[in-house]
Image 1 (cartoon, rainbow, N blue to C red):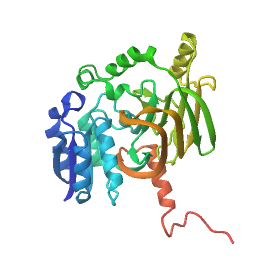
Image 2 (cartoon, one colour):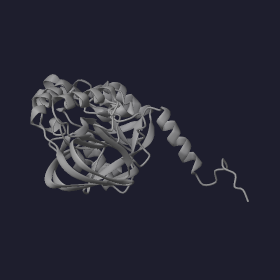
Image 3 (cartoon, one colour):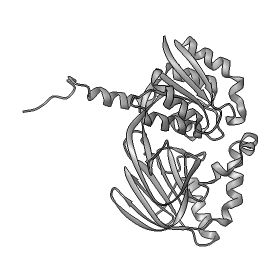
Image 4 (spheres, helix red, strand yellow):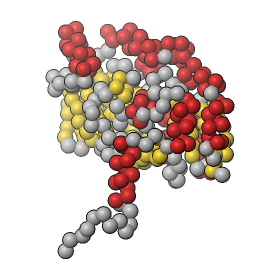
Length: 320
């Protein structure tokens, strides 16, 4: 019998996991797994548990918000073996689940782990620390981790929106220098995101339709500091319509980026506090971790690509 370690945050998303715990474990067991369930007790507890014991299991499943998922990925990057991760979303926004088409209903997400396929996903390294899908600075970047857990549990995603609107008049731009694979950018920006996601802060497809989760490249969006109320309205309107003009935005793809500023800038990693830094270097680790997801177009393309790379494959004919 295969072994599955189930690490879950009992407080995430209004603590709803307690209503589904029996069903989830039963689904795993019926799917052929011997299950060890571990409720986290504090921040980084889940990460430390996976680092300590994860190598002894065939699958590590986690349930919680994006912070819980972040801990699981950070743990996997420290292990020498590549163990598949299954994810049952239980947070307020669940950007990663939205991007990867993971069911929001807990029991359906558990079934997807039992019945799904593996998909190798890019992981970011931020000044030596790993993150899953977004590193951000500036306007709204700190809202997710500074919004109280009580507000998150009571109002869900609306708590983020309310907190962001309340802070909007207080934001100002940051003068930064940005070096990346294909060039350099300098200027004043109110927001910056280095991401591998089609959903950020609950906003879907903000960046582009060309997001590939396993191409070794990040989508970068830098929002130019608006001058006056009219400019702010123009910027917000473009973001809402996903039509990012060069007047208000700088966008590009890159595998590596270095951002430098004279003053320390606070960052967030997957919605959690990432510290204040004058210099930030981010590196994409291509296909570094493996997730279990439902079969779809992206998994089929990756499986086909992997099959072509197998030794002895005869799909490609060598010419003299």
